[in-house]
Image (cartoon, rainbow, N blue to C red; front, side):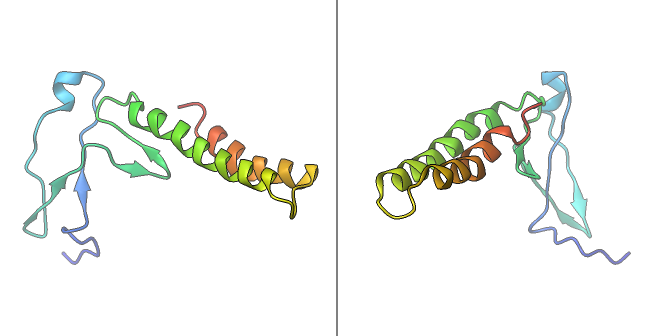
Amino acid sequence: METSAKPSKTTFSVFHLHNAKAHQYLNVSLGGQKIGHGPNPVYLGITLDQSLTFRDHLRKTPAKVSTRNNLSSMLAGSSCGATAPTLRTSALALCYSVAEYCVPV
């Protein structure tokens, strides 16, 4: 069987709501090569964990918002383009979009 997946770039994770079962080790292979285990894969910008608690994702989000908020603060402190509409648009585009993405998680 021909496959386009590269075993060296492919990882697997086990997800389970029961923590004891989520940390089981499996031997998985693709095309005869062993695939590595990735405990916290990122899928569509969401960091998943084995118990589906989204702890790592929730830890990363404030850091992302803070970094982007610092960019908005730097723009507000500059003399070029620091009008109220520009600051509002940049805050919505930079900070709000990250904070609102995956809020149900």
